[in-house]
Figure 1 (cartoon, rainbow, N blue to C red):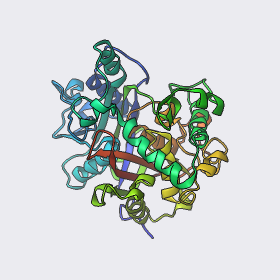
Figure 2 (figure 1 turned 90 degrees about the vertical axis):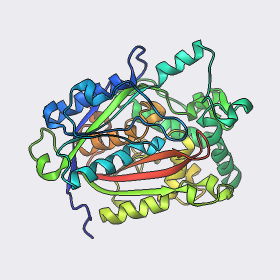
Figure 3 (figure 1 turned 60 degrees about the vertical axis):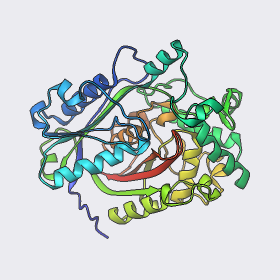
Figure 4 (figure 1 turned 30 degrees about the horizontal axis):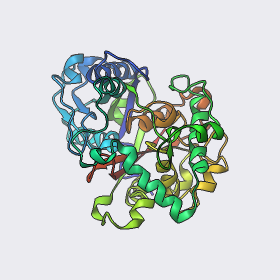
Length: 392
């Protein structure tokens, strides 16, 4: 079955700044630097970029407000600048938005960027003795971060299927093994064992510290254009083959089934149908990994193993280097850096361009990247699932 996108659009530039802890740099400045790197990577000039999408808007009750936007900081002559929200799904929502502008002939090259100064802001909050997400109902009762909400999901899976903390730890260990092959990862050179995972403090049961993603400063940007224009760019194009979206809000929140799965099925079915592929065609998967349990759920919900069998599947080493399905080959948000949905997107692009170095998956031609977010009921009760298929 031919793809309905028919290799019409491609990603031609990628920029990822240094990641980690950079006090003194705003999110806007980091997004601008990532965009500059992406333009250079594509062999383009600032004057070529005529559209921009900013993935820095948060969902729920909060919005990132800045005194200026990264395209103007960089001096890009854009005809439009658009904010996108929905938390961890932001990169894929931003991508599909950019493609619509290209499709309507309103742009030639669109830069999509995101900058994070979350680590630096978090340190500032500690100095001011402020914690959590102010303004949400749960703070007074101790629900001070997304971990409080997501812990319900992990607990329910453990109750239903006997999943263990050690099995969740196997995900953290295998992603760290990938990070140790990625010199750009924050945890590069710091291998992890199950014993170390189990000894790390429990922050919100059942999550140990090492079940939780990093908090990072940094920026990521990529450039999209038509396949025809992509021929003139410096790097080989990465083709966009299919999209899919799922939304838990169409269901009753108190249905306990919601706590052991993500709304993957409609997203998976739409993306695979559009791309004309099956699960067995995926060579590498970059899964949104705010917590270890989200990786476990996606492994089950996409079909790499049956529902409830994710624990033994990861414990057998299936997702790490040398495993049956390479997952989060750059280290993911657990061990490389947290740029929200831009982290899995960037690594999928790197793998499709064959630029992964020691972590490159040999012969990889089709990649899946996912996003998960879109808070509806609270700061961490994510309802939206998104995915994109990329190919060489």
